[in-house]
Amino acid sequence: MLPMTESVLAPGVILRAVQTKKFKTSMLSVTFLEPLTADHASLNALLPKVLRRGTQRHPDMESLSAALDDLYGGGIEPILRKKGEVQCIGFWGSFLDDAFVPQKTHILEEATALLGELVLAPAGGKEGFLPAYVESEKENLLQKIRSQVNDKLQYALSRLRTQMCQGEAYGLDKLGTEAQVQAITGEALYDRYREILETAPVCFYYCGSADADRVERAFRKAFAGLPNTQRHAVPKTKVQMEPEGPVRRFHDNLDVNQGKLILGFRTGGGFQDVSTVAKGLLFNAIFGGTTNSKLFLHVREKLSLCYFANSSLAQNKGLLQVYSGVEFSNFQKAAEEILAQLSACQKGEISPDEFKHFIGKDMRLEQVSLRKTDLVKELLEFYMGKNTMERQNFIIDNLVIEEDIA
Image 1: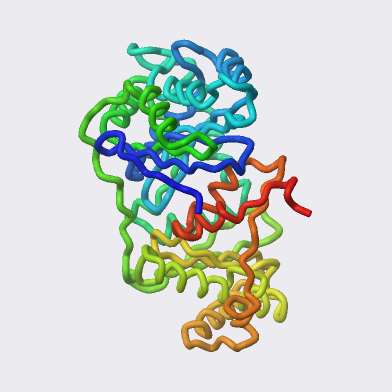
Image 2: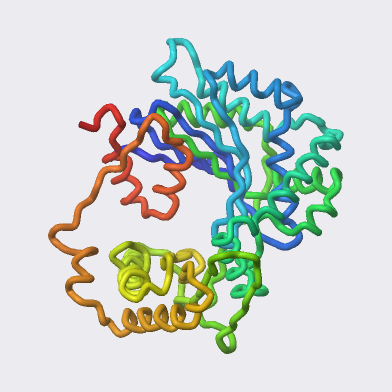
């Protein structure tokens, strides 16, 4: 089992490091963990974009690109994620691993230093952010908010969360709103930046061939300028055990050829330990999470009521979401059949033929493969994001590189 170490560098500042020689690139990141709030969502979303525009030593994108080229074509990009009711902001970087470069080349230290420079030494210095960068990135963020409707499925899922979780942080968009973005000033953004540096919990992450002590030294040096202050606790996601009031329904009229039918359910708790996570994932697989599920086989294949019908669990919020593509004339029939299949699962009406696809003697644990064209960041986010530590270690131990595949 490959070692993963966790070190506390300061109160509220942790480093997680995975040592492995199975990747040709190493990954490192810095993430600030903030509660998702209406007041700060847009400010937080804009901040890493503005910081990425330049530093005091590399004041523009061209200079930053040249610095990354010197690191064998490495890359650093902003992080903006929503995990439950936590807004995660920062940067992740991908660089050629030290094991594949000439001796006496220290990419880890140089890459970490550049990461620290982006966070701690913005182009405008102590006077604040450069106005041109703020205004340019505000416009980019506005365009991103407006373009969300173009992905109809993701837009529909977002609308479900907004309506279902009214009054809860989970119902907020990680990008904020157009009105909030338009109201941002350079001064307000810089004040928010200083507040995050001083109060937000920080998580550093590394995955590569370097040993844990070297990684810790690199991060300590690169982020020595991080304020040594009292940081707030990592935000918690509030789980509402029971729905409030009757079932709510809403309908958006858009110029589309295929409708999207989305249903949301409270499961009665979050999925925080190994037992509940395992039960939740098994239920979701049987209900709608796979091509052997009840939704796929009955609603889509047998009755042809949907173009697709799937389900997913928001584990940290305790929500079950069903999403489907349907003809307008089939909305009611599809909804009724989806609910019928959910009722069947609740009653335990699962046949041996259905169950054998998920638990049985023929069940296999397959290796995860990594090809030259794959992006390590996306693979790590997909495979590692919602797994237990035991499953993460299994994935790492059983990863195969393209050259090893027969």
